[in-house]
Image (cartoon, rainbow, N blue to C red; front, side):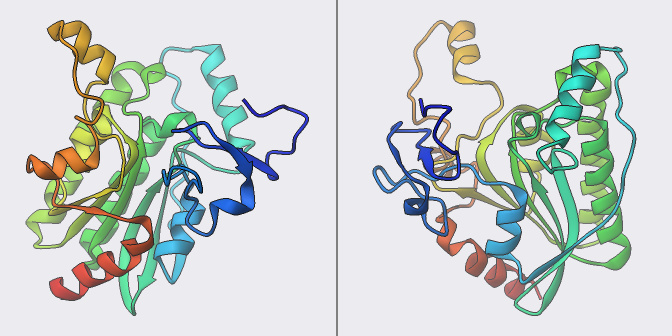
Length: 258
């Protein structure tokens, strides 16, 4: 682990090989200089890497705490102090001169989990895109449903699925880019419901985690089973993309759709 005395902006540690290096060596695309693994990045970086501009669609709501868990409210407030408003940001963007509605997850905000605010935002995004007849691009990096909100969190998965269905029924395009990690309800409700499903290189994508699967079937599973590369080989996603190519590929997909 990196010593707390070393400024985080100076040194970084790879989540895969655990090497420690000067942060600047990650480069523009945040790739480990030792093993080549992609490091997790936040919504603002995806905005700058993929889109020409990004205008936030404001859809604020108060915290939903249906189980009245004091520690949850404190954790949510602490997460907001990092500068993010919730686990997903939604907006309208341009890419290659085309207008598109976009949702981008923040994996560091409570593991990008889906609670009521997140659900409200995604539903609003698809409803807005349906009204404006716009395609949607979702960049998904989430641990799944937010268990601190109980059944209210799980209800968001159905609400999101309904909104996606109405958007699709209007003949509009939906593209998802699944990043590390994309698990649980995030995979089931919006990750795998897209017309075109892209997986970022090396991303872990699945429903249940590896330990849950092994404890259920009492068998060991391959470490690579839930990686993008395995999913594309087995027909679950359409393409594995390098982070450096994501803007080009998404732009090309939108061009072909037009």
